[in-house]
Amino acid sequence: MTPIRPGEDLGYGDLREVANVDRLLEGVDVLIHMAGTSVERPLPEVIENNLVGLHAVYEGARRHAVRRIVFASSNHAIGMYGVDEHLGLDCDFRPDGFYGLSKMWGEGIARMYWDKHGIESVCVRIGSALERPTESRHLSTWFGLDDLLQFMMRCIEAPKVGFLVAWGVSANTRSYWSPTSCECLGYYPTQNSEEFAAEILGQPNPLDELGRRFQGGGFVGLDYTPPERRPARTRWRPELPGLSHNQLCLRQRTCTGLLHLCSIATEVRPPGGSAWWMPKRRTGIFLGAQGWRNNSDTSRSRCATRRSFGFRPPTVRFTHWATLRAKKARSSFSSAIIASMSKR
Ligand code: 15L
Image (cartoon, rainbow, N blue to C red; front, side, top):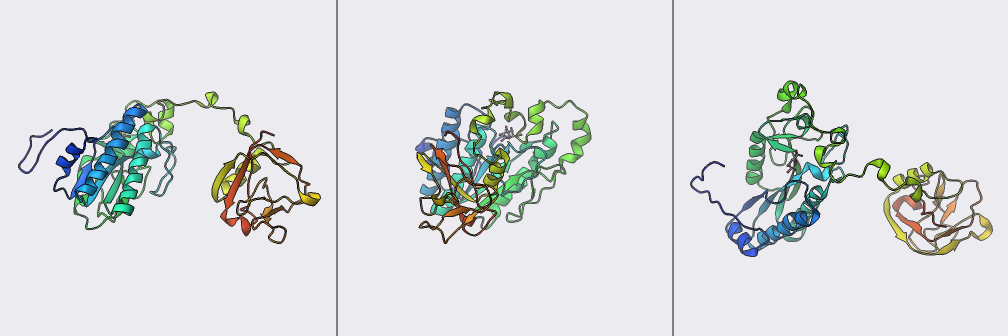
């Protein structure tokens, strides 16, 4: 670290302690928060440093009316995406470990403190913040220090940000993420790892096969269960006559809504043998395959569903139902769904 300059102050302390947080946040307008565990570590440590510690910081921000927090999120919140996938900021989280999970929490807490307490946050999903890239992966993830500095300055100066998530990355030609700039902040990266590509690609890649496949690189292989040691897929395969596993999965993927697992032992037997219905209002459906749709004229239940294609449904005894609140199930043929657990 360079020596302290006028106007700068240096202190050490545990952020879980209120007195330390109060001392740090007194008179602060914008906080750049980069403390905490920054690599994959056992869960208890991550919880203390990144969850409890961050909560203490946001609570301190409330006490001291801090206007804005820049939260160092991480690419490890989405590390389980493959390297061939290009992500926008609206992608789902796919953390590659407890550290990545803690960054999901961080983005969540930032969201909540904006919505409930009006404290602004910029969650910056930092790639690899380094002076220069040192391995192949960095050609996609590098966040050059000039760009990092520019980013933080924009975070301090921007008039209004509300709740914002941005990629912390340089303008790398091979970036996994876009946009690399952040218009709302006025951040436009100027560094590009490509200038190091020839040199880096001429060196051995330190990542193993797994690390090369996923965006999270080396974090992915820590405490990773290889496919051959995972629970056998057949254990979870629905056993529904007439429906292939793929059909069921396909239906599941197309559904919208929440999947609820209810432990209800019951027998489903269609009256007259041609239709099944859900005995609960507003929960649709089961055993959908190609052709479930709403059949509003059939039943006492608003979300009654009816099989509209031609095989005779068998009588099935479930110990578990998968029920679905399917927004579209009432109107759309193709969105009707689902499936259920085996265990007959
Ligand atoms: C991070 O979030 C870590 O803090 C850092 O140690 C690097 O691993 C970086 O990501 C990265 O993915 O290169």
